[in-house]
Image (cartoon, rainbow, N blue to C red; front, side, top):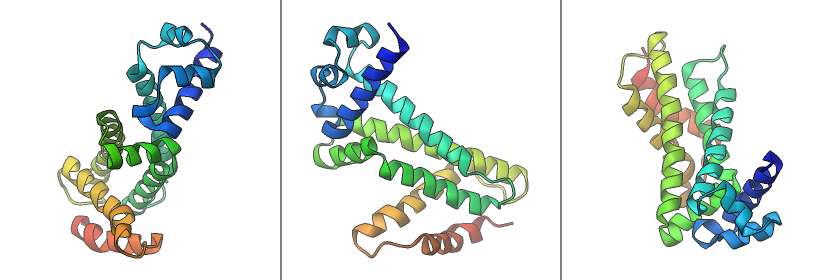
Length: 190
């Protein structure tokens, strides 16, 4: 089977998952959107889960590229961290599939949607951990547990850009940067 046909199926599946969510997407819908027979899909993917995981892997790869492109060599660790977190979470917040998955988690608690968002968060946390380790090696921040620090950075940032907005006026990028400075940078600064 051609790469073009596989990409056609993946595009159709991505559209279906983005519009209908994981739970409501069927192989029949994907076949119809792709303009192929359902059997054609099964020659490439065993089931809906395998197809979804392929799309999720592509999405995570795209987000990783966004993160890597956010790092600037002539910028401090903290400025890079702020930019990386903002760009990764903005990517997640603006991508149609992650929007639908978040909604599906809130409304139905779909396990596959929860697992997908958990995978994305794990990749984000691993990337931040890597940056923390580099910053410690370079002497930019004091020694700390990189995994815990990455977890705290991510959760604090999510709290500022998402959780806060549920009950208050949204914070500007500048306000988030100042709060990040106050609560995190001062504690890690050498």
